[in-house]
Image 1: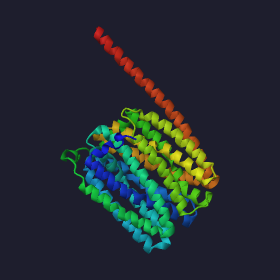
Image 2 (image 1 turned 180 degrees about the vertical axis):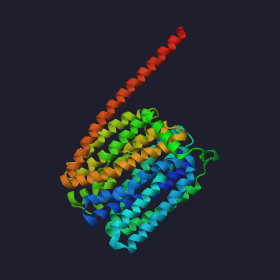
Image 3 (image 1 turned 60 degrees about the horizontal axis):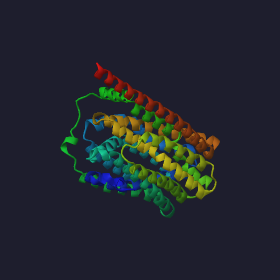
Length: 423
């Protein structure tokens, strides 16, 4: 690690954003851990675990395209402030609802998770596209995105561990209440951010259909963007949903409690956090696509070993290795999109990228949880590991082909210039 690891902290707005989000995400991961444990403990159903994930993500997919257009058309900062306030109100409502309607806890959680998913459909495109505006030196953008991922995964390391303790010593209502309180710092930090007037002018001159069409045409004609979206979509459908099954590993495979789930999710966060710091330390000009392909292989190997290990401490080591490889799948793909997409398309393209992510993940969660009911969680995760290996091989071959095409284009351009000079 070197000084460049934290270079984007030179930007006051990004520092404020980072600090506020750091606290809020602790509450978010506490609640996510509590949701998984409560749903599985009360229903003993792997399918209902998938339903809870589906409910939280699929509404995001339904509105994320429109959310991207809103992010490109209007003030991203004000959109984000509004969605964070709405998320705070949702968290308060969820806490109160499960206190007064204990007999319907699972369905209350699922319904209000869907409400949050709808809010996130507008929140995610605005938040992701705003990061670029918070960093004055655009050379620091990859670093800012990597640090943002570090923040997410550090909270995933700490949040579940705290949630496991709270679930055993107190109650899941405390986890939900803590999440509600955690939104207060992020709202305050957003109020302290000051953006240049030129960065927040609304864009309202085009109709929705034309803006959708423009974004899809841009993606279709830009292989570096379309390929990364396809890669992320397949991984999100077939491999990343393995996290849906962690409560089953904690309770049934390792005969543990809520603390066991907190430790497993925390170890996943630890591996991802170390990976995010590694990504933040990469030098400018590093081949991100190559790092992504190698990381996918590491992810696959970690999943395969974890799925077949009955020794709990050893399983934690393997899943942390897998998480180290998993992290770049989201961070690098997001970075590639952010770097290559011009400002006028960024909100819409990011929304399409996250629409694919948030569509494939919940569908994948339902598929994986259903399959695991018939063949067991270990065999399911084993197959996911092998699928990741296959995807990595195909993606690596694709990158080599694209690199060869690029070299050929450069050679042809050079030959054309020489012919012009001779003429």
